[in-house]
Image (cartoon, rainbow, N blue to C red):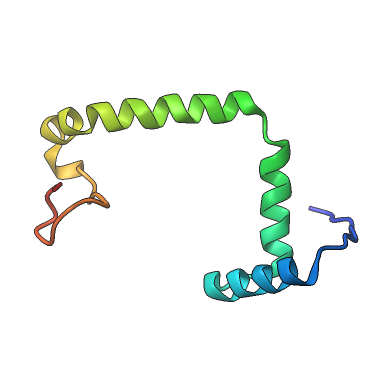
Length: 85
């Protein structure tokens, strides 16, 4: 995909914060700003649909896990045994 340079001016304090975050995430300031710009123009209907999907999955995760135990993913809230807390 072709890209186009864009020049913006940000306060020094914000630039320092962007650099810190980029280093912490192993990325670049350009990548952080590109992600923020992409999110700014994302179709809000897609985000609403994603939220409905996330809610559905959260509400029905236990039923899916019981129906398909071999395919149940590890959960972020799981204890060390891999079971949900």
